[in-house]
Image (cartoon, rainbow, N blue to C red; front, top):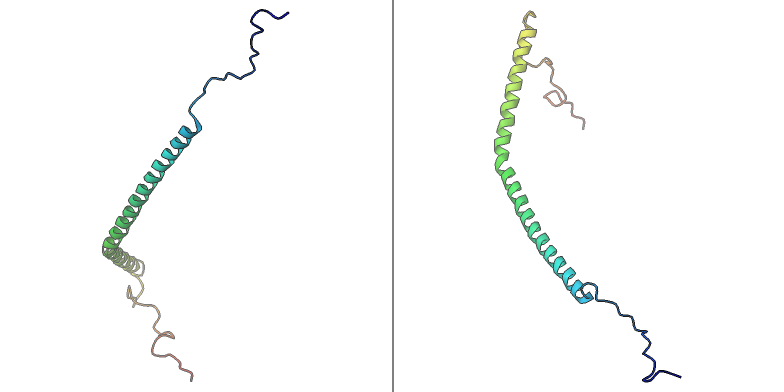
Length: 116
C-alpha cells in the first residue's frame, strides 16, 4: 500500500538558473552602442570634411608661391644649361650659347603654306 500521506510529487520541471541578462537588456545595449558609434562616425565625418576644406584652401593659397618657385628653378636650370653649353662649345668659332640652332622658321612661322 502507499505510504501515509501519499507518494512525494514527481519532479518533472526543469530548474535552470538565470544565466546572464535578458534579451531586452542585450537589445538595449546593442542599440546604445550602435547609436553611440553612429554619433562618433558623424562627428568624424564632419571633422574630415573640415580638414579637407582646410587642405584645399591651403593649397589654393600656396599655388602662387609654388608657381614662382617652379619658375625660379626653371630659370636657374636654363642658365646652368647655357653655362655648360658655353664651356663645351668654347672652341667652336661662331657658336653662340643659348641661341637656337635651327635658323629656318618651321610650319608655325611666317613661311606657312596656306592651301585654299
